[in-house]
Image (cartoon, rainbow, N blue to C red; front, side):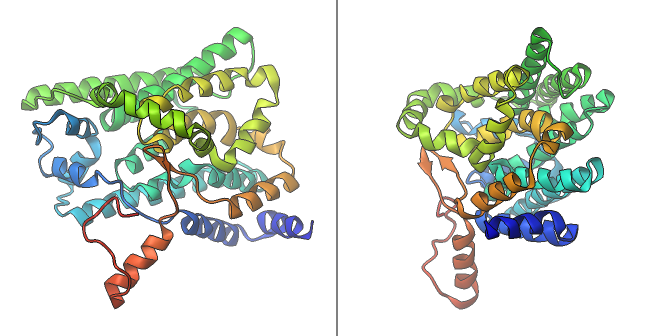
Length: 371
């Protein structure tokens, strides 16, 4: 097909700067930009990160995502707009660091393949679809992946991740540990060292302990966390998953399912990865923001085993990568919240801009759930 030939030439024969700029711009067009609806509550924590601003237990989980509000407090970021832009900088950093590392780590062809596969995954733009504390979480997870050959660096970064989002860090790197142990039992090759994943997971646990000590020292009394949300709404979450499981499962990897399927074709050597991923899917009936949670907690596993696996990247033909890119171009961005498929934020971004500058469109004010 001439279209696939043209796409393949664009991917592998364009100047790197042109290829990266166009591919990333398309991803922004597909996704758009919006902030996580509870970012205002996170901003409240940043006003004074050494107290619990809420008595109601259903808000206190936000206090446990403590690192980014603390950093904003240290930088004297005091208004909600600046707080959102502060997190948007981390979103940009997530993309920029990934691209810079890939072009430094791999040969040109493998780097281009890696970028296409990365953009095909919903996690690549999660931090733009939901600007907020996820932006910081993903940067810390990425930094841990970049130091996978330096286990001693994983411990302090893991501590920071534990202070930012302990539950996601624990589950994500716990899945990596399970995959490594299964690889050891099955006598198959692992793509990452045990010392690194143990140091990462240990750091996450230490980070939670440090945060508990900080709260104890400053008298921050919390009566609930994320477990409370699961216990309080588990029937609702399970019903959402039951009635919408097809689209929810698709949204975890989106077009990236093609990459996952190709890796699974390796048979026994891919068994550890497949089992670990299936284990993570057990979270889906226990959360309300299905795509967001699973995209994030599967990222370290997918990145360590697939995206940063030079041998696996080299197994892709240019034709297959072009086909993945073509499908990604035409398939809408998959995202599910509360069991409901959502659409790109980009049309809402345009409507908001035109309303602000020309008064066009009827745009509700201060409604984070508008899109």
